[in-house]
Length: 224
Image 1 (cartoon, helix red, strand yellow):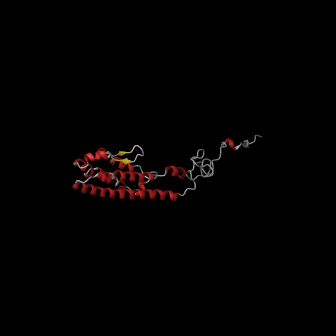
Image 2: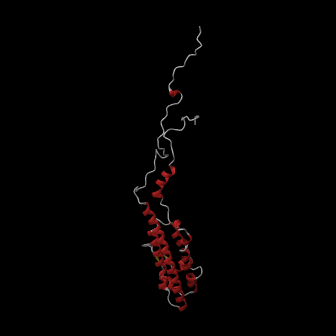
Image 3: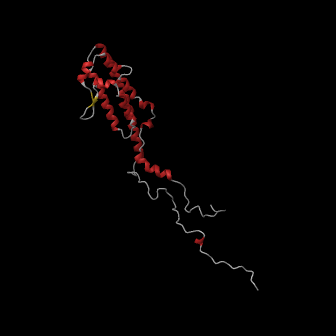
């Protein structure tokens, strides 16, 4: 008599249905094969970095305000000398002295400050008075100096008075350039510390939740 019982298939290995694959790492990290290097000083004090940057910004604001006041005093001094027909040579020499002091303070904190602070000064020095005063950098140490002989020829001329004290004179230009920081937020005066913060930013920006097992292949009510 023929049997009605169907033949039973033999048990097959499970890899016939689901090929064996490597298990994903428990904590997935996009840069696992080529992780960005840690910062040079992993034990650095971030508070000290931010404090240093804030002090640099505060120092520049204080220096700029002081130089503005000095330029205002110089303007009044030159006005009196022009009215009295007195020599102005000594007073004009204060301009390169103020520029040298200003540039020194910027260079001391240039690693923390945006370059636009000094670029505004450089732009103000694109003025006709620079040529008339013989204002230039010393070839030996790059400090600012003026040509005394050139000034003596024109020191009491109306042209010199206009170039120095006019509404668009060089002193007015410099005072205006120094107000650049006044229109910025304190945080905008400071350069971001990319060299120290980038590795940490790259790491934390890539963190995400990850299951210890791959989602594909797990059975809930259906295959994912």
